[in-house]
Image (cartoon, rainbow, N blue to C red):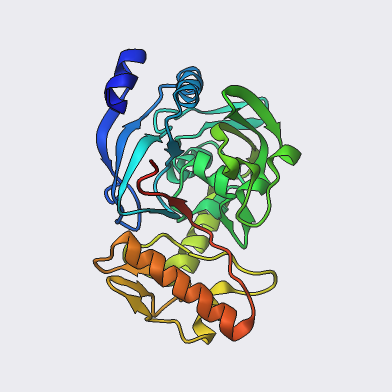
Length: 297
């Protein structure tokens, strides 16, 4: 029995899609397929689903808007889980309660309309709220961990609330990268006028205008302490380096642009970039992106 049939028999009404295309659902636009993608209706169904997959030994992975993600070219013989139906946004007790499937753009629109400031750093970042918490997404002006009060998540089949300390946020990292499913985030609701919020967003949009156009994952490597990964890569002569259809942007050396690339092209270019910087500077760059494997059986 295939995975899709097994899931449909166990979960009546489960929203599922067979032969899920990673190239169609990631910002880099390459990668293979997954056996099935499911979109739980809420925390209860997500919790039951994860328990079932663990019990059956079925591999799974999570996917938000598909930024900072590189899926292999082959078949992922497992389940992609997307929380796109968890779209709650509400002001509760002086905090913003936000579902994992809310996009950064939707959160910013709600925040501006309701006079909630402090989240403008998300301007122009392609992300879901769940993905932003997992990756501690952000820029120099702020990161997701700076705004979070608590996070609700499913760990080993159990729903629990993580305090800010338990989230273990650091530079583009969190405890949730260990496979914990983020379902809801509570954020500080700082009051600000719509005019102030709009001005902050406009300033950040202006700053991000210089970023490369084209299909990419965003920044490939995390900035080492006190340094710019992009500047290091550029100083090593890596701008415009190419493997197949994957090319390092001539504008920003920490971006790889898809010009007809396979995921294998992108992965090979990433390795070449990392090795070149290590050989020339002694610095081992850490990837900012998530990898989804191909065949796992």
